Image 1 (cartoon, one colour):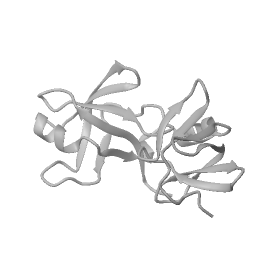
Image 2 (image 1 turned 180 degrees about the vertical axis):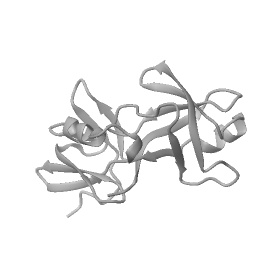
Image 3 (image 1 turned 90 degrees about the vertical axis):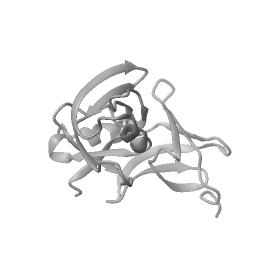
Image 4 (image 1 turned 60 degrees about the vertical axis):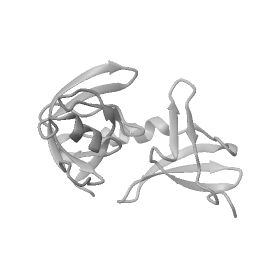
Length: 171
């Protein structure tokens, strides 16, 4: 099992002092807390590769303002926008990812282009990334659980909206 887990996405810079707007990674609640050490991936030239969370403030609409000790200017924050935050699994609550996996089971999956695809059977962790296993009329489909493909999660409607790459559903 991997020692690090992707728990948050850095969306955009928010303050001149280096604050970043962050959201929980797909399917997870927001888990960053003061004192946690985070790795920023993919690495960015002339930007920090790691930082310790100094402060977290809820902004509303599932967004948080996060301050890291290594990000102290807006230039550094701008460089990290779009990166993911990995933290040590040992620093996370036990079962943090099981709750997220179980919570998505049974969700309807609708693609922007193809419409209804099927329902989520389970989330599979293949070591490199999590995959959504979908049962549908076209058979089993595995979709990477990344923001570029799973573009929206509607918890009230229990629906995942995807933007599938060309050819993924072709037989």
